[in-house]
Amino acid sequence: MAARVASTLIKPLVAKLFVREENGADLVSKPIRVSKLVSWHGQKRTLDERDVRKISEKLISRTLAANPYEPAVHDGDRIAVVDALTKTLLSLGDLEMEDVQAVHLGHVELARKLSRAADDSTRNMSADATNLYRSLVDVCCLHILQFFTQRSSFIPATLITQTRMIDETMRRMEVLTARLPAPRSQDADFEQRYLEHLGLKYGKLAIFGLDLSAPGQARWPLDTAYLSLELSAQNRDGGVSATHRFRVEGALTGKHRVVLRGPAGSGKTTLAQWLAVSAAQNDFDDELAFLRGRVPFILPLRSLAQESTLPTAHKFLAMAGSMLDGAQPQGWADRVLHSGRGIILVDGIDEISESKRLLTKRWLTELTETYPRTFFLVTTRPSAVPIGWAADLGFVEFDLLPLNQRDVDKFVNRWHDAALSTLGTSRSALRWSSTGQPCTSPCGASQTCTSSPPIP
Image (cartoon, rainbow, N blue to C red; front, top):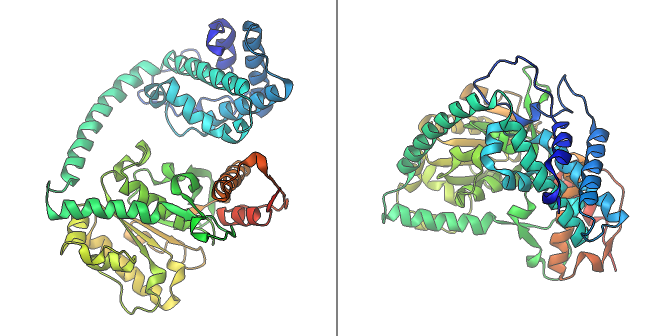
């Protein structure tokens, strides 16, 4: 529907979403982050959320007026489309990519990426309302990309970026080629088997708090359960920086040694599992492309509570309780890590005694010295170790931030959908009571779901 609206009706409204380019602006040699171009961020902000909603309403009104013979959209659905389109446009401010990257992505993929912000709002829309929403997002993204390409800074930045992309592609090809084990080797055969095993072992999570007669069924795919959390970098004085908030993927970009701090139930272990499964399936987005082709090892420290020593590489699978421990070729784990193809995920510094944490620090020191090209992620509760605990080893620290309301709503909806699919019924067949209690962590959100049972 929206594709048949004249550009003269849509283009001026889309342009209002972005800051004006000042006359005489110098040509810059690097791309600009999309979040810095929107009109409701930064020092030059001219819009707020209400203004973006008004723009959404005008886009919808002009589209409907230009298509009088299309199926009517009722008032309730129209409000839902306004809500969804507003959320979608506002998510431009959260987009962690540059204008050149967005253009390279194309308007269809950009529309798909932005639409994720409105997943909850579109869930119960009618078919006609959904078609209207999707068409509007599609045509808006087309005009957004056109806006980017017409900025004076875009062409020089694009030429430089294309050159860098070619160089980076060549470098990645060389790195991936170097990481591939010799074909038909014993290592290669076992590695494929191990990665498939990881995907099965960690690819599903239990639906927390769901009481079923067959509890083994209360599991949902990790790619559905996983919610990209927000992190914040530590200030030098140990405080949380309000100006450096990142989604996990953006925070980890280019980092090789990370300490992740967060309270119980904040999602630390789930994040470690997501990294392991994404590596096993070679399914990282471009932000984490440097982790593609790597082999993950999850090391849960709770399993060593009674051990007096910490394991060397050939005992990593035993530490993780892997059924393939006895099948690995001799020296395989060491060869993987020595080649720079490893990911070591040390989960739960807080789950070992205080006396053993010093031993763990020494063990971590030896690992980083022995395998300097390996990616390390260490998780802990904030109270377990002091800030800067592993800074001398080159680790950077991030804090898991509380869930915002949008993420809480998204998590709760996913929990309910997973629960309903397990129970073999539909969302329309049941309604859910509400406790009204706030929650700021995945675990807290699960408990909220548990305490608001389905009502026939």
